[in-house]
Image (cartoon, rainbow, N blue to C red; front, side):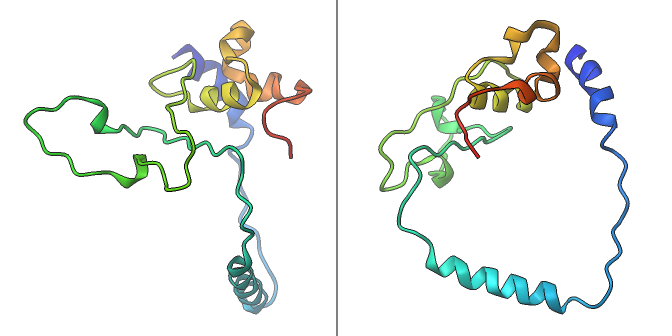
Length: 136
């Protein structure tokens, strides 16, 4: 609850939204989207070294020993043919607070290392990071 209370005021500054008005018709959008879909046919065969999937509020029931139920295979939890290694990613939070999981993975340190600033790491810490897992 404390995390929510301290993060809420920082998030409130982004709640205002004004619907944009565009001149003309949708032809430009249609042309750009058509060009985009044709570009996806020429995808590179080079694949990323690391793929991380954050499946928030998702649970693989096969990790439990259910004796009375027959649970079908769930392909979203199965490695693909070219998967070299797959494992759960352990993070320093549970029961919500997904932004803390994202921060811990990307920055390499748990948000709890920042004490009272733990709930606002994206506001107070991220702008000062010098290195992290992802480079854009």
